[in-house]
Length: 211
Length: 211
DNA sequence: AATTCCGGAGAACGGTTGTTAACTGGATGA
DNA sequence: TCATCCAGTTAACAACCGTTCTCCGGAATT
Image (cartoon, rainbow over all chains, first blue to last red; front, side):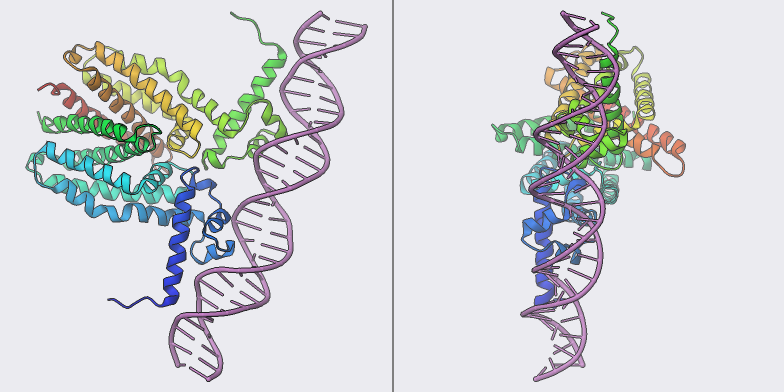
């Protein structure tokens, strides 16, 4: 399985990653539909035509960025939703996980939030597919919970989608707090409290759903 | 109060509206940060330089579009939230209102969804301010409800923000359904059922919040 | 009736864009 | 060792961009 990449393919993947990183940086202050191919190559310090060796277009690069931002997140979400503990503990753990991810990869979060409804169709679809996967995965996890006894499949998916949406909204709020000019630490704490209460209310509704 | 606009100012506002409409149309397939000034004037059939008579930049035009899309919605939201009837009736009425608005102004909804986290800061702020106003208005309305007895101010605002977010998510789902290639009618119906159940669950949580 | 005002037109500027073609030089494989 | 491959380069293309300055003609004002 471990066949060391030839020094050739290694270099190629290196500049490919450099293009992705540069694009992500530039996308902090604009959206993908206005991102120029030359702009990216200039930031990397490479000829414009080199771009075509890696991506067909900036939209293609955007799809790759979606994979990079969301692809490695599935196992994390799975384990977080399915960890033992009462409702309150799971909420706290989930919020902490989201806060940590936003702090570690703010540019990726901003990119997903920005392009989820952005102007580039293939990227929108890639994000939609990833979020649908998350919802499906969350659904099968919460279905295992004893609390889910008597729930219809549609209701489980509805709740899963509600959780996924809240996950994204929470990430956006943390990102805003993180970019706060004066006191990001305090803002982060405030967001934590608000979104925790939100999830508490949803879980109260979940507990009394079958009444 | 009713001083008939001079034929001069009338013409000016006419082309201004034409610029706004053309921009809104062009923004169906791109985001504001890639919208060109010349692009808009070309669509209207006017000289590029005429743009400056109305807007300082495309970002400025975007802020005007935010006002156009959300400004006239405040009274509607107020009355919808405060109408009499039990919880279920209010949910149905709210969902119907959102569906009707999306059907009547799909381009406006898409614009707000796209630019809420888009690449143009002044527009993001304008949308954020409008949504904050909605949340505040919803808060004072639900505070009047007898069900809100014993609720803290923070909790009321938390719930109001939850409603506002759901309103926007619902609008986005209706928009996607509307743009569905095969059977928009059925998709709309399905979205209606899903978001109705979502709101039901939230309201169940609301009812048992103080336990 | 004479004068001011002002929304829009026209032309030109320097700069940027995506895309093409032909080329270079070092890693790769026989 | 030698022929092949291929990531990246160079140069050039037509098209587009935002912005400035100058001008026009009809509405508005006096």
